[in-house]
Length: 274
Ligand SMILES: [Fe+2]
Image 1 (cartoon, rainbow, N blue to C red):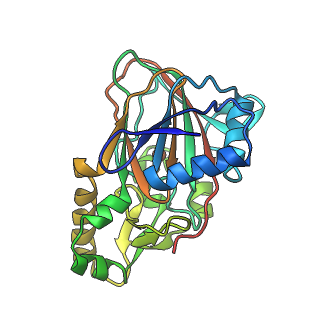
Image 2: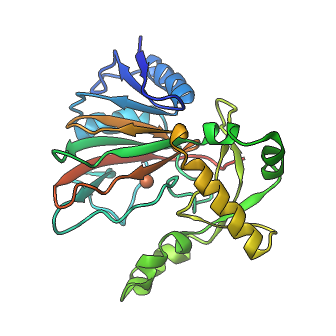
Image 3: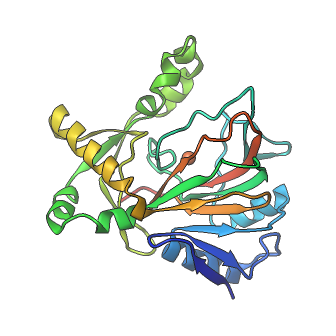
């Protein structure tokens, strides 16, 4: 049913042959789920999804998360608005996997382009299964026995240090104590192994000396940034990206300021990494 065109060597496919505006049923879920396991991030064009259709698509894969910290579409608390313009430049600049400071980080996100700058504003994605496969057997084996610490306060340290930041984020800090996750994660459906540390939220490797931990994390973060593990999404209005947060990282490119960019996103609940 789906027509899948790979966009790069490691991950990513453009998907045709499906109307995300629905109606969608179990057969659509099965086809998309299989494509997601193979390609790790899926791209769609010309999908003028309404908020209700966006929610219906996400519901096929699990429960949408609610984010109090972000504005949302009226009547749809699960549909987060990510908007940047002259007055509000984008601040996220690092490669990351979303919300690994949670015990159960998200399964994935479905991002819909609503207002797209004339140029710039692409998103990079990277395959953590390809990054893992790019390591030697020796290092794969060593990393397989390690656990990492993922910490909200580490990821948001700049915001916490802003005037009033500690007070503003006190609730989030309290609700999100540091979490431990395996350094190598097994995808629960495909069984693929992937590198599961990221430069935004991974603060340390457990049971290592600070210098060892820092050096190893720096190596792994530099390693996963190699271009051969990545692909790039050039957004148009009504483009959609659906990434598997269990086995990818992403990085926005902040090269469009002061142009206006508005995206709508639903993040789907995930399970505990193993
Ligand atoms: Fe993100």
